[in-house]
Image (cartoon, rainbow, N blue to C red; front, side, top):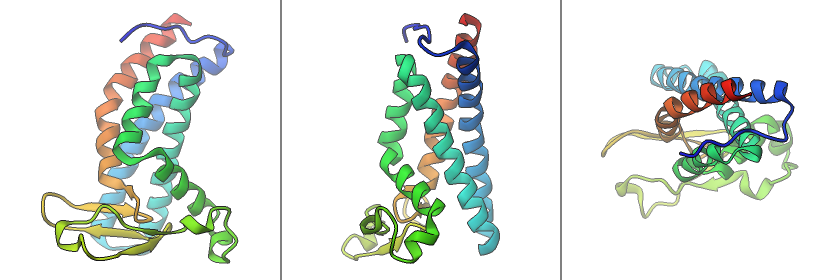
Length: 182
């Protein structure tokens, strides 16, 4: 990885973005693991709150990485890894639709056509079955090789946690090194 100084950003913002970036990636991992624990307990009221917190943490982590990528290409690899694992559009769609659920529930959401979504990540036994879900529902498939829980039928919780665990050590190290360059 090449070393690139963060430029064109006031130093106070640089320090905040670097600190917040690692914090939100770590927070996404923590919140995702909490979410899976509550999912197992089947407490729907707590689960819905934890789900919203997880989606918000994931969205904030991506936001911070995008802010850093604007002035430092070293961070782009992490955005690409997240996009390849779970899809940046999926994160944005689910976050927007959860945040604006009141409008979507009335049929007036900005991306209403995408509110109800066909599940594409299905176990082999369901490959020929059309499964639809809205952006505020979670569907879980247990069995085969692993459990897959999809928020809104599109945002894979387990893959989100896995990619964040994969990139966190590098992000933490890179953020620490960049702070000393400011």
